[in-house]
Image (tube, rainbow, N blue to C red; front, side, top):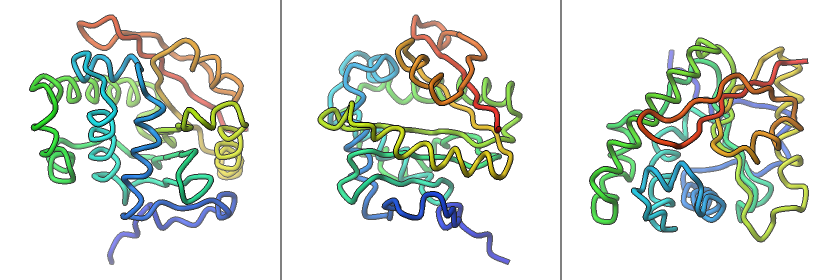
Length: 214
């Protein structure tokens, strides 16, 4: 029997939102690229270049390679506010799919070290995720709001319905972030801080957080 795609999973709480299709990946990546300007993780992974096109390319390749494994939705067709959740047993983006689904094009604009840094980061992130969850809870892969729409309540609008669903099915949710400001933001959604580490051999902070089901 063919395994059903996670992207086809029916979750009543988020039915009113716009669900990402294959043709929407670029729009979703655009939202994230705009929101992640000068973000510590991308300052590191892009070797300080941190340009919009490079960040968008990284996110596009990552999301495109896992789009059938995740639930990705936005508040409208323009993808002004985006949330991406991965179900239990998600173990991270894989290098070969990343390259095949857009990553090879990055070789023309990305410093060579970018690919090694992305792999090192993914390894560190998934090691901590496994440490605290054994990959048995949901994972908030990404939530971003376009800068022009920040402060309008869109983050709560797109996150709270999914958290209601996770409470209903008695599932925890894990995430990582890289700024103290975001730690305080996620605490408003009942996430608790598990560990503060650094991406190996860098000064980039890595905050591991979890939201226990109610």
